Image 1: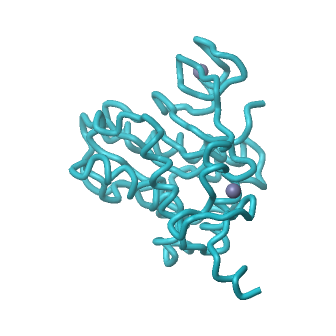
Image 2 (image 1 turned 90 degrees about the vertical axis):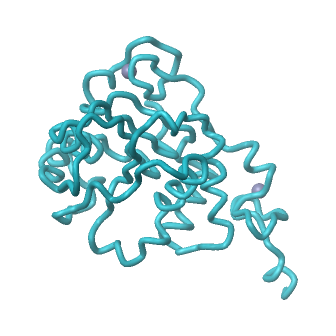
Length: 224
Ligand SMILES: [Zn+2]
Ligand SMILES: [Zn+2]
């Protein structure tokens, strides 16, 4: 019994894992990944394509989108454990997985995390997006990464709202600190939930003169 408690185990399959891992190497190998993408906007799709329905709709204001993992199974378990169970042991594995994503982070002038709910700010260091930022900074230590965007308004959870309500709900929720004129910016978030929040963020940055706003999320919902 004691042995079971002390031995580090994989969050997903329960097998052996190292102290600095949430999931074991086997589960890392089997992480559900997107395989097909739209060349036009980067959004995951069911087949490789040059144009998709997201190109001019869902992620308005985002020039190109990068994502790696499907938010199911072990991916969901990891994010959930950090976010809601405040798990810390091995959470840096998220940073390592991001490093393997192949996004050319050095091609940006600035990385900007999507700011979360003001009421969640006190648990900032346990937010998955902070771990992703850490991963990016381990690759590009000199990239500008201060909190250019911040929330000025709390919002109700987007998942409960209709599409039209979502867009209204996020209107004017962000404000900008400092200038971003002419900059190539990468927005970063853990999961793509609704396009409305990231579109609003992109809008604020573009209004301030950003030359390009791309988005990276660690995971996204299954392609439908
Ligand atoms: Zn495992
Ligand atoms: Zn597309």
